[in-house]
Length: 449
Length: 75
Image (cartoon, rainbow over all chains, first blue to last red; front, side):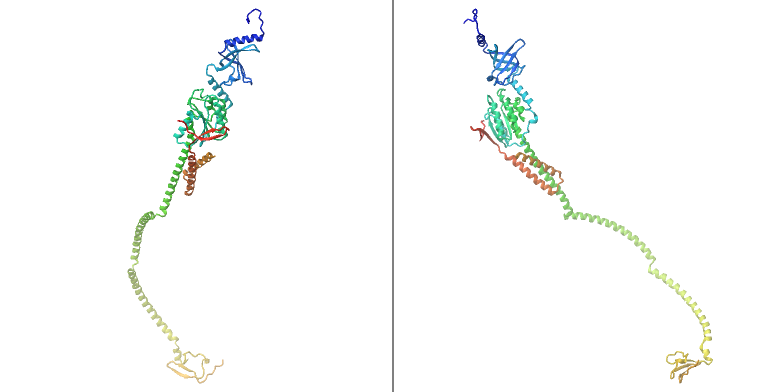
């Protein structure tokens, strides 16, 4: 059928189908670059957007099957390179690019995906420092999520072997690249948590291309790491490789070997701390004992050590002796002085001298006495003479001479002055002026008065 | 749990050492402190040595459970 023949009338459907055929045949695979606008992401999973530049715009669709493999997310304004075929959407009469592959213009698709996911997760708080848990200071069981044949587990085991680390290593083998790897890694992290198989997890792999490392940039892995209760060390590739896992993990190790070192470091630090403490404990005890011993020794010397005591005493003796001598000297000097004073005194009071003095005094007194005696004798002589003269006057002899007699008892010589003293037969002695006579009483006659 | 006990023990060891280093304890208290320290130190040492290096691999069974097997890495 010649559609350009005159007056051949086509239905809209027919024409549109013809146009679609032409376009599909000639634009089976095109690459086109433009800026994304009017992006629509319905629940069907298909992507609808418009690519435009300053002069034109192109309707684009990416069906669910292809969109599933998209590493990055579309957003309006994104400069995009799309590969696909041109077709027509009959119902609307619009031609459109059916996209099979998309990549951001300028940077690689993966790079863009990385940046986008990182931004999104950061906004969500998955990288928050507050969410990061410290590594256990004393991990016993290390769970490793990596390939059983890769460099990572090899390096980790090498480090632990070299450092003589006593640790339990539990490998949960997963694919670490290619389709499905991310899901395996995420599931492994979840399994480790569910079964509480480890104190700390190392999740990672050895070095590779950005595509090889890609599973560790997947959201599913990031989320599994984020919800892990076991602290996670992310160890992906080399020092310069940063993945989403690194940001979301509790600790990022530049390499798997470094992760192993980090795990050991904490327990080695503990061992070091413990050993240093033990050392300090012994040292402190030794010092304490030495200190106490020194004190004890000092006490003992003072109390019990006979030699020391002797020394001590000897010193005291010396000291005392010296003091004694000094005192003695002083004393002697004092005594001598005293003695001399006494001697002087003594000399003064010498009995010989005393005797002399006494003798002199006696002599003196003797002569005085003699003189006084003589004087006294003289006096007495004179007194006697006058008294004798007076005696003569008073003497009964004078009375007797005048004829009186004195009668005395013969037995006791008592003068008889009363007749009552007499009785007949009593013997009397009668004294006369010259001589006496013994008489006997014949009778007694009272004198009547 | 063992980790906590270890940490507690280490902390106590630290306290004991500090007290003993203070030097103001009596002989009896010093000995007590020392004994306590030795106890904690040997506990910590035991805990540290308890872990033996063991490398195992978890193999997932068909029913979804895991079995452990010694792991020998290929050189």
